[in-house]
Amino acid sequence: MPDSDYPLMPTLNSENPDSPSLEEQVIAGMRSLYEHHLNHQPHPITCQILDGKIVILLEETVTRPEQILFENGQAHLAEQVRSHLDKILHPHIKELVERILQVPVIDILIDTGLDTRRTGTIIMLQSR
Image (cartoon, rainbow, N blue to C red; front, top):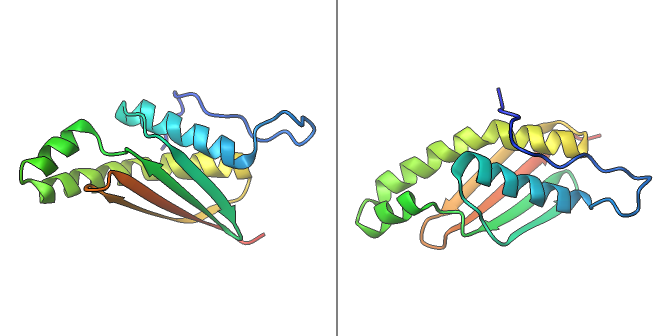
């Protein structure tokens, strides 16, 4: 069950023209997730909501311990660590997106390049 102790952005209020866009809310929520769970601040983060999916690119996502492992010949161990971190973040990302978009998430695909320090996330949404 996701831990909701970290700050999350409210859902979009369509009656308030100053409210952040859905993409901005997802970006802020992802930033918050990484800060809360990994004590890490990826930047920049980009997000696009397409037909039935969300594509998020997070840069500088690799934590210092992962970097140390990777740079010292322990790439396999660093990849295992990242894989476990991604699995831990899955339910939190799902909760975040479902709350903001008010649409069920049916799948989340995450891949991180330790050499590029980028994470790509594709979130598949249930058809309306």
